[in-house]
Length: 188
Image (tube, rainbow, N blue to C red; front, side, top):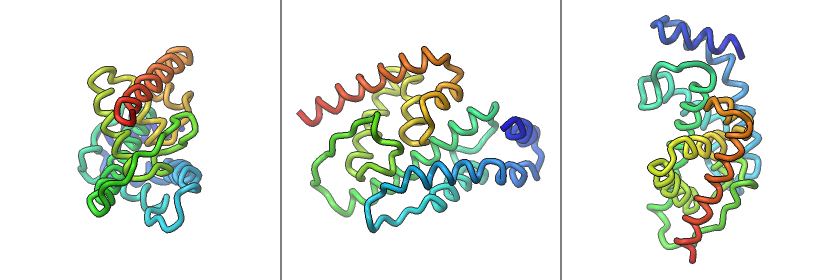
């Protein structure tokens, strides 16, 4: 992955061909993660891992709100996780606009590998809670985004954020407890 950092530097310096060189290096990793994480998606789902990766890639490289200069591999994958989160939230909101009134589903953040495993209502609820957590503790919120929406492991997420293993574990424990308490308020 050292090549990724070099190519990201080229992108930052304005090299017009750098994005073309970056895609083959990150595409398979992003697609592998998306395919693995979406394997448990409910029957009849319309979003495929390839489509999620492609849409995120377009947002990252075509001047979307997620595009920009990345300061290395971790920053890039953080931006990719944010792009995927926004795509999944937009899809969930669109589905929720069609069907209103369904009940929230309990989410165990240790067992959910990626947001695509959650139903639309739950996804919207987690996103709302995450926005509140962002105001309370931005680093914890970023860790949740990388894990829940980006499909990264705790170790990968901690690396991306520059955390030691101990700090990542402590931050993850706090985020889980905070989100659990937030969910309990809503679900009674």
